[in-house]
Image 1 (cartoon, helix red, strand yellow):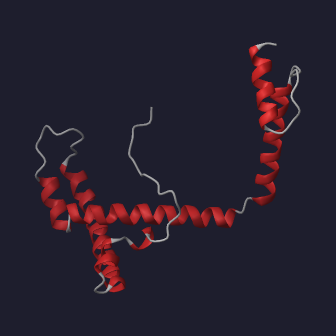
Image 2: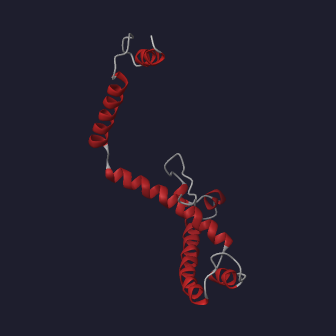
Image 3: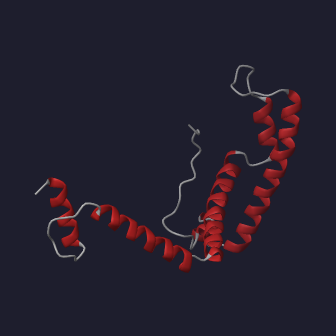
Length: 154
């Protein structure tokens, strides 16, 4: 018996099928059958509303976490302004003055959002320090938690 037939026989036994000499195409047929079943389950049981809700919960948990971290690093629009205006000439990706002025408008809006978010969070958490330390949308978020990472597209 070939090593491939032995592996297929072992697989058959684990899957509750009687062992024996595997026939040509058994593995392919098994994969095809599993794929067909998976496709039927996806077609019949997938719920787009559930999917969108879970994706939104994941997005909000990550967005809030990073928004709060950004607010710690840059607690005001002035902090962004000082940072942008203080960039040395040789720094990579440094833009001209017109770009920096436009970017500051975006960053002012971002800073205002982060400040308002923190105010809402403080109101919700009251004096509870544990609540205060945990982003609102992280509580009860889908598991496992995701890792939002910025990596280059290669």
